[in-house]
Length: 266
Image (cartoon, rainbow, N blue to C red; front, top):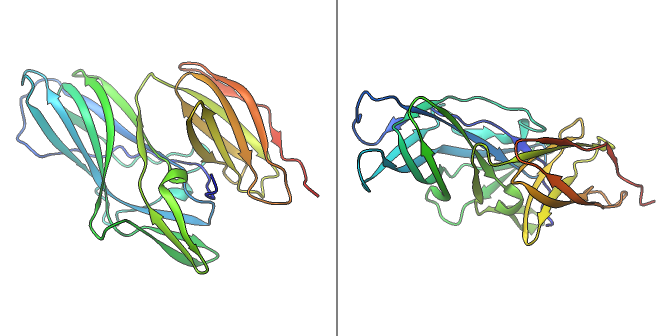
């Protein structure tokens, strides 16, 4: 886990544009898509997001699948994810879907992705020149009249690869997962010194998810219940890495850790 990352938390709850005709006047379900990602530890990172396709079996339609497109409606599709850190959120919009079962989400990305450091821009390239379609497995039943928040975890720790260092070049292989409402707990913490841009990784068995601290040193994880080890990488050779073992995440609860101080390596 050599990527240089910090945590980003943003909300992508976008107005719905149906790919088929309106089904009825029955009560609709409100679906909010919440984007969570962990961009590289540079000054800023932009990811171009065109929208999300929602595939579902609509109630009363048997096994017939319907597809709905949720566009990101701003003119500039690039999201400056690096501004949304340590619990900061941005509500971009919301919309409705008919009752039924969501069976898959697919995020559409454009081709204009970039990483900035010291006023230098570095493009982050996709494998092809075409827009990326990022499959996100999910099963979620929607009932009319209710609201649902689905967190889309865009893990740039896994998504961005450094392909060259002199000069820098980066590739994007998007890794996005869905965190469903009522299925997670939270870990909150803070780190010193705040001048660092450390990476924090929550590890459970062979699975891991990474995040970063904001300028105040604060970080946040949303995780399924279980026992995790936290690996803290200061991303600075003047300080020692650290590990906190056996951190328990409980359903619908927030665990706030004592402030963590990186030890000097000098």
